Image (cartoon, rainbow, N blue to C red; front, side, top):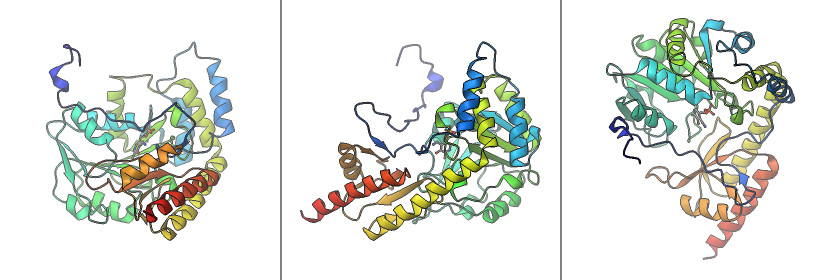
Length: 356
Ligand code: PMP
């Protein structure tokens, strides 16, 4: 740290992204990326846009907004595109949290949330998950602040129903609820249809997962137009050209190619179901996943040990060394071939352990 780093940042502990090693070719199942390339239409439209990079991108994202409004059946004033969904989360925290409103999140969730709270010096309240890693909405009753829930949650993969969330959102119109739907396309129920009815709801989604565009950085928030206007005020006060023109074009291409997205999702969900079944046959404890990853615990090997041994064999998964998570690993669903390679490695490791 330099001597100029402001004391304002004293509480900041930066987010640690999943590792992206370059020492060898890994089977990369650690950052919940799609194993499939983006839609050819998205790639072609991004390439076309690259020829006009001398121009600024459209700060209003008009073409992308129009395509998304039609696709998601919302108004163009009910959505806001950002540089990945991390950025819409940042805008929401900056727009709505402060001395009068803190953040309230599960104790086990996307680890970027507490980082946002720290960097913006927002009070952060953690509500423990149940023993079986579920969010119990009753536990959030009466807690003051913006409730931020990943649904499905990460790294557990477990989803809440839309009906349960709607009851919670309806219960207190003065409580703001942000539902982070980064993984919703793999089996969750979206709260997007509720934004017209509830002006205390924000829904965020990403193009990083189901649309295979993690490297393009495209996220989106949906909410009543007053909330979107507030978040736009933050955008225009920090990063007016937040979405670059290649990404905007790719986003339009992806939305026009819904068939491609659906086929990728179907392949990933099918692969997940087969993989989960095989893991359970091997005695693994696997949480019920509505996402493109599974959270699993070996019957014999510790989480850290399994992570390390897989890494030695060229397979990367994500390990969290915290008391409640350390027995598990989060495994992204790759291609069927990648999952077979992982299963083969796991069988060898389990056998070696059994023979000890
Ligand atoms: N929400 C959750 C729950 C996530 O796991 C992630 C990243 N993996 C994000 C949001 C942010 O994704 P992105 O910025 O790529 O849209």
